Image (cartoon, rainbow, N blue to C red; front, side, top):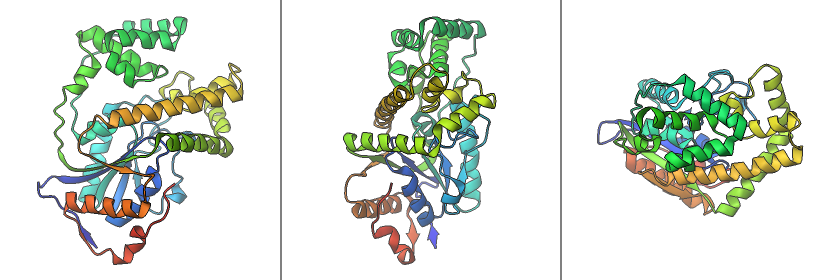
Length: 335
């Protein structure tokens, strides 16, 4: 039995972040069981139905009875923004807390998670459809890298954060500059960074070479599980190739192969390279966040579990009888 409170009187919020393939999923299940938590996905791609393999979505039968939220909530043809995520996540946090459970965000989309942790306010800078269409045409004529260079000229910090293939967010950043004369990065840096919650943020990391090896192994497993068939099915069912969902890692590269634009070998090589770069950008984003307690997943796992327990107990004033859950502290491997 556990009682989770905070000295501040704010709602406790447990958060687990880290780059792709670092080991968040299995650790999150262990922590959720230990602390009576319900998991909210902090992944911008797991919201899409029918996109399971490429997003490393944990199958329902492997969730061990732990509720998972913000997964499979919209079709892949539907745009989904950080503001959408923030609104949905805040609602789930309140609902979970009202049922006496601990809200627990798990994911690797830095801006999405940070927007909830610190209550970001998103300004209504308006839109200019003609400008957007102009940038879309520019990208079609000159390529994604050329559009990305345009952003780098006016907002280098956002350009560094955004992948050249992330056309929608690049165009939005250009649009903000076009409409306001300011930059998206300035808007983000201007946030107060004061949390409405009592935060406990655990960040997972590991040796870069080991992480890259795990990324390549994960991609090989995705291909074995049927990633190509998943992408083919999405396209055959009418998901627009230009949809935001189809720009996600794994989907864009495999779609190129299915359209005959490259060989499968080239597509996989590109996917592995882009995923390594993505993990690097994730770590860069997280390291600019505050309040994170970093855990090296390459170190002794048994010691890490004891340290994690101590961090959570200290942050949330946890009083629990966990002798029946001693296996949680007895070691094991998180994949």
